[in-house]
Image 1 (tube, one colour):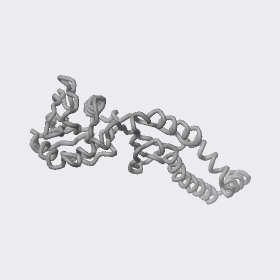
Image 2 (image 1 turned 90 degrees about the vertical axis):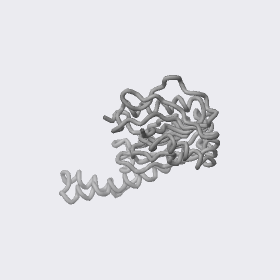
Image 3 (image 1 turned 120 degrees about the vertical axis):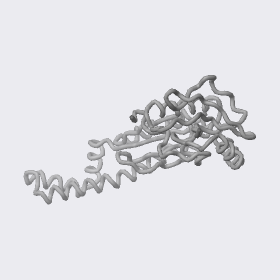
Image 4 (image 1 turned 180 degrees about the vertical axis):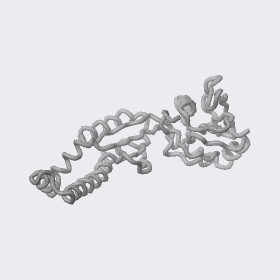
Length: 256
């Protein structure tokens, strides 16, 4: 049977709760595979695993408990190896790398920060910053709304200004908080977000990191910032002993 991998820990990591269940229906019992000074938190992999809410939460819950007891290198949701031997084989083969990563990430957590524009606020801002947009808007109003071409022209000017504002605001958000982080990993662009970045933060710096986010909110009132964390450091771990099935553990837990 194939093996589902939640994360990698030191062999000396405190034991997890007895009887803990993982992914699957019924939940597969979570167990630990040891290879030298490393260990992998695993369970049997259920057939036909999909990113349903129940299984996403189970994956996250296992990692949360492991992370509360010590450093864990989290695997993405859907990481499956052919069998237990394949997992321990990779632990042995890449022991130096995983040991270094555990040492580097010890005492650190991840915070993900996403930002989007508040529509009315950003429109007001670009209007105040661009005289040509104000002039076009006023000309349209004076002529009863403007011709079709005039409306298209105004829309293009506004869209271009907002797009430029997105890049500038994203850079400002990152600059505002990266000083409280040990590392930054910018995520892929996605519709609706002008910034999507993950920050590796020392646990002792977490409160100050969140204070920096709050100051960014105050300084950029036209940007809505959402913070998710503390999380295991997903964005700062290379793929491990199993190839991910393509869905990150951070996927919306409301998925069907």
